[in-house]
Length: 157
Image (tube, rainbow, N blue to C red; front, side):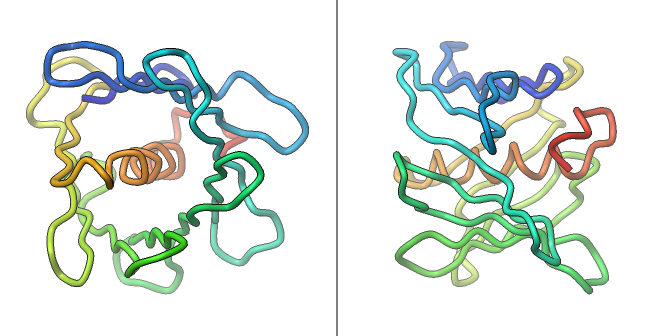
């Protein structure tokens, strides 16, 4: 499950063990969020792209962009797209304000997000179907949370 505090996000597995930390407080020029694994080793960075019509973030591994997460514009309901370097894009739709949404690729479910599994404030569940999609999905969840919930640090919007 994912627990958010301000602009930091701690990701724990089903046993309550920390798996990832999304650190939004460590800033350098252009860096917005640094992602650490359970060993506290950096596994990626999320950086906002500027001069784009829709809010867009790049996921970096080292200096290489490995995925792009963007909010779709001109849709009846909010929606997001995650494009990795290879493979079909992941579509994200649902009720983002209620933490109740789905990730799909070619109409097949990739992950589900739900707050109804938890009572604690700022805690909700993320069920990922395949481990290989976990980091990409979690990055999507963090960006969606930052863009859709006004209580967050406004520097991420």
